[in-house]
Image (cartoon, rainbow, N blue to C red):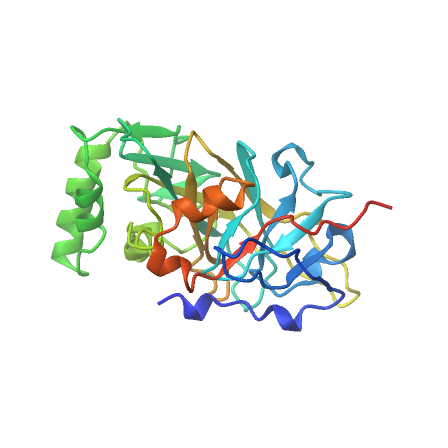
Length: 305
């Protein structure tokens, strides 16, 4: 279902290809790495492109001056970093006539070796509106099984339009209510996050490929307005939208990014937190390992000039 998010990276301008080093025989051959210096081209990629600053990207300024960005290909599994925080950047350039605000949906599923007490984390960044009234700031909220389970979350977000959806929303908000309702519309926009509720569900292709049974679901809404490029080539913004993902002890994460603004926005990928090939191999299920599209993140960083 995510093939429509596939970003044709071969069309990106001013991108240099670097061959990754050889890997152990128990891992599939690495694909070619794609890298380039941020100020030489990230905002010249296709609208909706996502990437990861290398390395320690969470410490960088929003403009990421002097950083290298790896373009993230859709549905791949990455490894090669043990950072406690990973920043994902998105080229939020406008690519259709809609000029209002929208939101980015960012889903992170943490995979753990041991059970966790929490089941769900909800976050929201920016100004949102509910029932034509500006909503109060939504503070990050963690939920536990006695409040809501992951199965219940998926069930609520699978409801059909109409009366079923109304009942599901009321029940979901009854279980997650903290004084501020999470689902809403970005101020100045028309995209209500509940309308795209199915995209927040937990289903993904990675749980069948990883030897990690315990999961925590995190969903985040980020308000944004796509930036415009004038006839003179000038941009209305000089930095991409970004989200910092904190590892929180996870051995791996699966990341899904999307927006109702455009189906070309975002994609999904997984990241195993290890720089050791043997550890990566042990965390992968054998059937998946034989044909898994693995890539080593930051394995062939160019030298800084």
